[in-house]
Length: 60
Image (cartoon, rainbow, N blue to C red):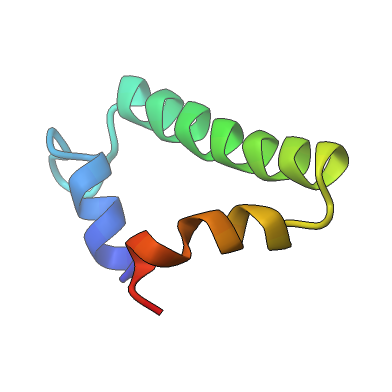
């Protein structure tokens, strides 16, 4: 799984070197994902109401 993410994140890699622009974009993506999770935990630690509202769409 990690290899597929790295392969998709570095389409211009030549001789095993990842272009700097792709590393920055991957870092921004990972950073925004982590900050979204931290924000969700800080604002609404109990996600049960969100899960209950999403239950019809999940199919459970």
